[in-house]
Image 1 (cartoon, rainbow, N blue to C red):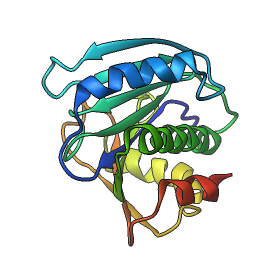
Image 2 (image 1 turned 30 degrees about the vertical axis):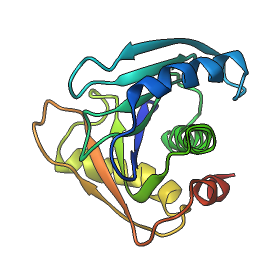
Image 3 (image 1 turned 180 degrees about the horizontal axis):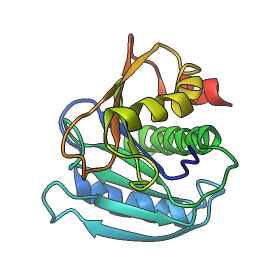
Amino acid sequence: MQLQHFQIKIFFQGPPPAMENFVPFFHKWIQESLTTELLLDVADYSHIEKGPGVLLIGHDHFYSVDTGLGKGSGFLTQQRTAAAQTGADSLRLCLKAAFRGARLVEEHLRLSFDTREMLLVVNDRLLASNTAEGFASLKQVTDPVLKALPSYQESQHVQGDPRQRLTARLSFSAPQTIAAMLAALE
């Protein structure tokens, strides 16, 4: 399975953060080149219920404060470009981008994350159907990468409407720091 477009959502710990703090933060991210990635623009969709919140648009990734997927608000990273040879490599790149972004959120906005659970969404409906068979195929691609993360336990299929994107809930036996998660992939 040649998957290339993943989304990773890392949930915030505690109450949802103030969306208005993310607009200047994402602009700072662009202006001060806080990452090596080409970043293009910031869009504020916080007025949309269960939407993307505030969105940082980059060439390779979208970063946002998402309130629509899963159990609450979180930092969502979406892989946009097909930058790797395999699905496992694409997932690894997306996880690294997500953890690097989350570290910036921790450092600059003083927010923390609940790393006991994350969401993984496959943004390729034609390649990965939201079925038990699609999930079994996804696990073959993702398990080798996810097993490198500290305290990784399992992924569970978030079943629902088969017309929706294939989604997995990633669970961890103990909370880890974002830095430890990133270090495990470096």
